[in-house]
Picture 1 (tube, one colour):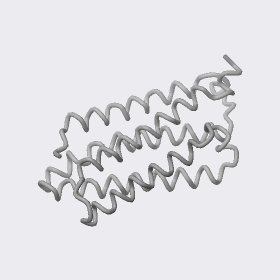
Picture 2 (tube, one colour):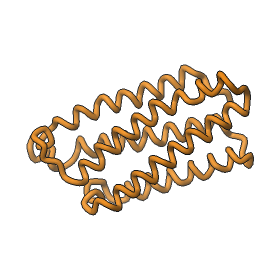
Picture 3 (tube, helix red, strand yellow):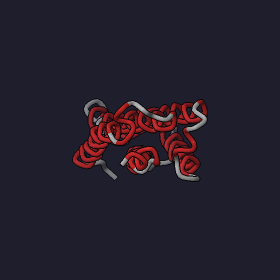
Picture 4 (tube, rainbow, N blue to C red):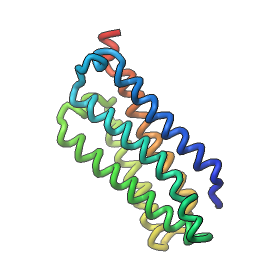
Length: 168
């Protein structure tokens, strides 16, 4: 499978769009006057960080292909994107664990589902980077789309948060 640059640019555009919409949730409800819960702060920061990670990571295969070709290009790209994904996962998990009321802001089971999915994709990606799997392009897309999914979950959770709804 060969990655099409138009698909990657489309994913980057979605990531950037989510980054832009993060400003919308920042001004809605009580948050507009600075009344944020700890969980809302965590979700907002995760939304911004992950959507920007998707935006920039989507361009990695395009840039790497200028130096490398074929499977090596995909393998190097996958390694870089997997490192970014792992960084987001570790950062998000440590932030959620440090912020006790952050877990309350998510629907039941959402954090476990996002972490489990991320760990599985990162694990498969590491196997590919080290030569045990050949699905480089598929795993690049899975990493990017999973991060995009996590950003969307944070966006939706912020939009449907009870502190926003109470003020509406």
